[in-house]
Length: 258
Image 1 (cartoon, rainbow, N blue to C red):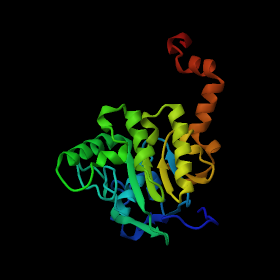
Image 2: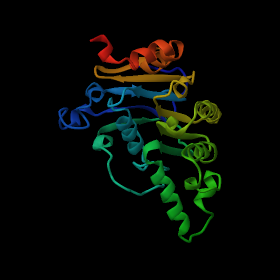
Image 3: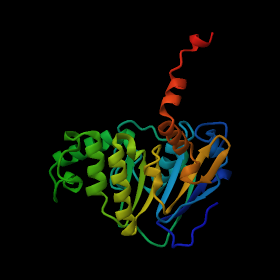
């Protein structure tokens, strides 16, 4: 397990209370990577949880977020809504080791359910109440009146205020490569204010933050790797370096070899 010389973040580590697991043959505990999960030490700045589809990245990230107190569909700890409850019970078996500091801000960003968060914000702003509208914290423009990428980035830019815990599940989903690089720059600005990130992503760009730890989920467990050791980086580099050869192989008509 990785260990860090720097002062701990808001979450120092989290793990699975294995003695309380009812069965490793039932979901979500039958997910291969979770079968071997004991404890993960989190980087005080940026921690990545990556791997192939179906390895349990989002399930693990969701469990961490819900155990902290975030709404399962995303948002801040003050969001309390459920469009279609679908989160697993994994958070009930997660042990969090909290740091000495307490965050002044925080957000659980889920690409797949961000539409629901945007809708909830609009619904709350239609209700009369003291204080200003919530959307002002997101740049003042309706998130539904923007493209997905614009709405995503408006949240990163305006709603993330710093000195916070930010849990991001596939934030690159609607971002162009240029915007993904801008997200890295924004993450750095927020890290400089004392923020901590835990990120699940498929993007080699997003997972390139240098002061970080990267955990790679596999059918055989969870490994700490470098960016260059991930399949995401290796496959993307190979494709861009040998595009014509790889396309010829991918689009080959098998009947030509018969």
